[in-house]
Image (cartoon, rainbow, N blue to C red):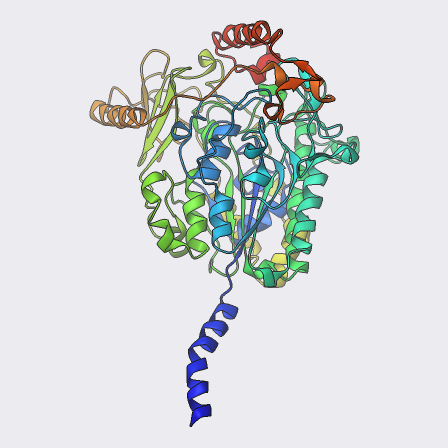
Length: 585
């Protein structure tokens, strides 16, 4: 009888233990491309750049066809990490520069910290771009166990130096240490290597993994080498006529290769079947020479750092064998702020989520995606920038554009359109890619016919582009706000502001409400201490040191700061962000 009672007492524990073994928390792998255009992946209808690994994931999972991001790097990354719009963290105006004495506010709890509280171990490979002027702003102090990558917004992919505002220095880190030994190793490969090392060395018994893979690709490099990629990779894409587009395509191809290697390592480590993989971009592509790059958002309007669909409607997909039963094109509206609460719910923190959802702008979209239900998100604030006097908001199918950036210089439609003929798409590459082989092994890669159906459904087509405005008036957001119906007009060709004044006024009122909740932008002039020349020509945590090269900082600092302010004011008065000053707009 005593023995029976012991067994009865142990039974609930055994049930809990078995249950936890049967349903372990999923690994979360978030792969973020930089400046990738909507038209730069095969699953959106272009056959110009081969992306078979990314496409294999897309066809086997969910293609997020109404996925929105912020228009430029820092606002997007701050939204991903905090679950908040950039207007609520002070990160809404342009980007964070390497010599600025600021970062994502330390009082903000970040995504890896939430997941760590739920039993995860978090790692980052690649770009940070959320502050490094003092060590507490850097990745290892904000929830990540390891980091191999860089702190600023861009760098050369081979020598790993970054040019910014006339400053030049090395930006590559292994943890907190300057990674001199990685000189000459291609950045995409460095990020891939750290990613697969993390996966290979992660003990499943330790709990689930959160891996944030923040690629440099396909952001341009330094002005003297804006499209850095090996000539051998460029030669493979010789059929692309425009040489700079060909170089850009080679950078994207290396990014796609990285995705395949990561998926394959998950398979080798027996982690793939219990993984959630997200592939997405941080903002729209830098097209036709913008920022010395050659992405394509065709047929969407605008480019990176504009509030048109080409700047804020991003490439996105979600893959999971465990949770997603049927591949499809997901039309649920989703914003980059939604990942934090979505992942927290997936990680088993739904009850804890209720304690802080009032402070978040993001909403968990998990049930809507898994069950194919309506998205709980009814509106998207694309951004409000009161310095540049530009803002945009979408509510339902209606989008409001008020003001614009660059004085309207990048408000058009930009190519290249790419090879849109479905017959030019290489379907065999999808199954032969590393990710495709993994999908075949799991028996989740759809048939060729279903892949074609998905690709067609995820392709945006807009007839009569740029020419036919008979359905609406010409839009000049510098003069008056513009209104578009994105369901009927995803390419924002037909301004309906005069036809629907009540809708226009309703969205203007909603935008005004959002602006009343905004905090001021936290941008600051460059701090002369941030100049890499004072730190052995490395970008570093300069704010932790009161002196420069053993000389008192105070000597010429006021003069240098005044020069920095004058340069910034001169350029921003022309509507040019300082990191784009070599564009000669």
